[in-house]
Length: 472
Image (cartoon, rainbow, N blue to C red; front, side):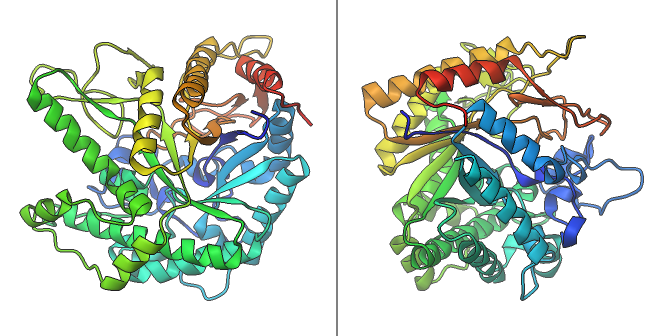
């Protein structure tokens, strides 16, 4: 598997910091505070407030990757990675989103990062929009409520394609595009009033995003024919809680809703069930014949996905634990272990979801997020013994090998979440750690930013060496 992409992943708003440095503007994630209001704002149910003097906004400094990227890339190379999935901050390239010309300082930063990766033989996998909408576009258009966003996104993406032509082979249009259903502000910068038709707003925004993704697929193929454009889903099949047909139907419906995005991006057509659903919910979308033609002709080149856990669905949730810790909802599966944050741990579910995605779409797959959020303790001698993370990852990697070998599923690569500790997207915490590399920073934003290698770093380095990959 030496031609396999073995890597780690991160997102600009969770690692970079330097949130107003070198001309960068504000984005939606910059407006998510640490604390009890975070979830209400993320779900689009509470209007955001601009940064106030008494609030703490974790993304503003994050782990300061912006000023530590050379050190961090060197650690990735020492680990033995041959790929790194990261995102570009839209507001670092177009500070408000409305500018006619890009911010050269922002482009220069990412060019330096990409060149640093390539110098170490690390393949850049770039997410164009990872929960990142410039505030200027939110103010001007209500974010993805407006068709105008398609042209703004096209301008932004084409700027990246032209600047990084031949340097980046793999692009991802939107991170976990289905999260717009659960956290519309986080996913797409949407705030939805109580008296609005919530699903009308969400599905309209989703349509514009998918049209934009098809459009930039067309543009990428013209600008750099060797490059590929992928869709991305927050994946995890919904299991029926029991063999009760009502539970089976609820799970089936949840899976249909989750697959909605890939049905369009992978097949180029709206699934038939949406016709009745939209009518019953009073949803009337702005969709044109040109939109449908674009979606049909320019489907995604590959499907990338995150997998942390499976989900379970039950028709009657009375007396059943629904605290799954996960934005995708569902109920607690009594057959599975759980993480410190309540997420189900289901390695076999990864094999199930890989098969279900492949059987449905038959496009190359890439697993671009998989990991365990946990509290890590630094010992007096500076060690981090994260055997729990090693166990989680080993079980999932074993399943990947079995699925590829026994089921014949073509997987292009695996980039775990995340190669280095970062600010949690869901909770805004640093204490919910995912990385092979520890960063000395706490939930209050205090710490030296010192990087330390965890036991999992040394374990994965050995694992990759056994796969034939050697650190450069």
